[in-house]
Structure formats: structure tokens, C-alpha cells
Image (cartoon, rainbow, N blue to C red):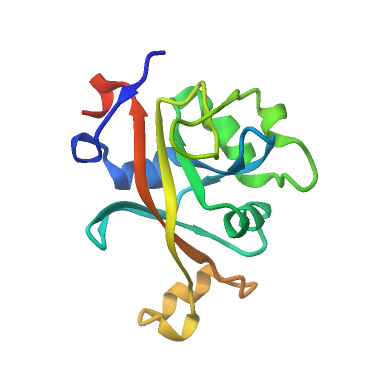
Length: 175
């Protein structure tokens, strides 16, 4: 598969469908040091904040990836074709604390262009981000009280805002 550089303003992606139906793989850490983790995510956003193109991801403090998000200054999110759905389901439900889930998945981690966190050979789209802000989600700010039902264990996410610094994808699919 050939990926090419795509400028953030050229990216065409049905963000709601991608988040909700197809998911992303969030990776954080340092590829060169072989110290990174990943998890499948289906909540987040894409847009413009503080005059910068951003990806906003949320990670619960109970997730192993949270430790990496707190320690490292960047992350990637990747999309994959439909044949990877089962693998993404496993990567979202198993913990890197208990197993080498990346190795077990069969995915091939590769160095990114501008950040230390890895992308994956099998990805259709790799978006590299530099963390520029984070904010813990607080239940006292829920205006719609039904949101609280997503937190039966009171393990509220931290929201991470990543400035998009590089995108690689299949041009015919994403522009």
C-alpha cells in the first residue's frame, strides 16, 4: 500500500462514521526505544482549536495507554480497512499490561515522520499529533446528566488535544 503526505486542509474523512463505526488505533510512546502502547478508540473529535488542526482523544486513567499519554509528548491515530476490525476489537479490549498485544495482533509498527510514536504498515491513514493541551473530564460539568452513565466506575477520561503535524494516507481515498 502506498501512502502519501496529505495536508490537514486536504483531508477528507467522514469523522463521525470513522469514530463510531470503523474506529482508530491510538498509539503513544517512543518507537525507537520500543516503548509504546496502543488502544482502539471510538470517542474523539477532529477540527480546529486555537487556530491549529487538531485531533482530540480521550483516555481513561485505568487504561495502560494513559501512562504513555501522560509521559510522552505525542501520539498517532491510524485507520485500517474492514479486515482489521477483529484485530482492532482485541487491541481495544486487552491490556498491554498483561500481554504484548501489538506483537500478538500481527500489526507491524513503523517509525513516524515527525513524532516518536509509531504508525503501522497496515494502516490506510496515519495522523501524527503533538500534544498541546489536556484536560480531565469532570462530572460536575455534565449538563446532560445521562453522560454520567458512561462512567459506572467513576473513571473519567482525560481529554488530550493533539496538533496534527503530519498525515499520510492513500490520496485517492482521503483527499
